[in-house]
Length: 139
Image (cartoon, rainbow, N blue to C red):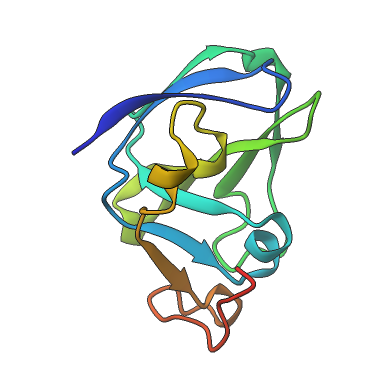
């Protein structure tokens, strides 16, 4: 069941609300981007994230070597502290536009509850997002 959670970057310049079901699947990927940033994401709809403060403090990064069509995945970071808060993208297999919420930025979820979130591993480096990579412990 979706619940509304408060979320923010490290310095607090960017704050938002996110509707997410923490009992549903989250994802960790081994692609070069996700592995380097330790991105732990939960896919949510385009109405499930509501920016409260800091729109002018967000920076947009798009990986030039993305396996998807270039420019279709936007990673949003706080310009001050550098924390990625979410990504927004467009993929046909996701039904169009979506958000990928960084679960690490949820402010009101205790570690014990985060530890229960189910994780699905993606072999993004091989462009096999529906299959787990051989090694997942570092993700």
